[in-house]
Image 1 (cartoon, rainbow, N blue to C red):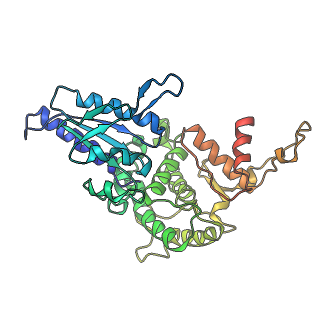
Image 2: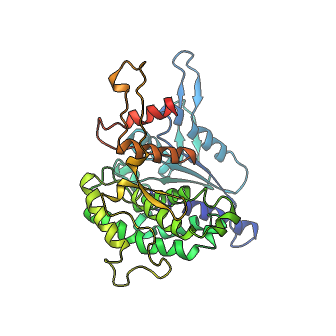
Image 3: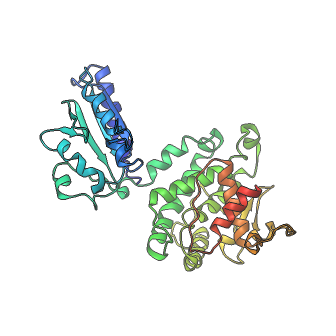
Length: 372
């Protein structure tokens, strides 16, 4: 993931189509269909006989091949298989990949690929691919580390509201340049993650969370420009987003290490250059008591860091609850996870709860669904 495989295909397709429109290099227009082979059954992929009526029903691959093979134009036609390669479905493609270039279906139909058709496999790895499959395909290896996170940041930055993208571009860029790469190196070398993550995924989570936190503050452009505390809010929201994105996937022992690292980094003690001039002094630092995971940033006035425990209100237990397992006692964890879940749901972002069995993941989600 985040190796730009899909974007490379999109850019190549658009470039060839543009060359055709301009009449250059004798190129043809490009059309492609993307198929996820693991999102459907084998019968839905290639076709199947109905067990009752014994009638044949074409699959997605059969319909796509027939459409492209019967086309009466010279346009380039790509069939892109975007998903894991395994022996369940890839072995059925061997007759297509060899010199015959024929798709043989269980119905007895044989579809010949046209000269303008190409098969492209976009996959994460080849651990389940057989030598027969690998030997029939050309390989292009794209590594996420060579792509990096900066292209993601550049495209995200221009999508922000003008108050952030233009007025505070230098500040936001300085924050990301100062904190992201060192924090990623620290996470990879010094903490244990509960679930494997990629650098691009963590940085994208940071960007999404940062923009969600500031959404209401910059929604009205005029009021945002008149806000004297906007710079402080931007820096503090960035720090909060950093904690719950790049620092969110580590275990309990990693929380302690990440807390020490982040505090020293924000104080400028880990760099000879110190804090970048564009950022300046951190006007609203995280309180020294507890961990950085124990606070949320409240955007009121100059802003302040509020302990999660302060958000917990007295709650009367419903007397109609008969099961002890249905009673949720408010704690530090329920406060912060509920806040983050509400924030994600409000802005339509996906959320992943990760943790050992019995830590309340299902309870939090169920309570949100039932009680709002």
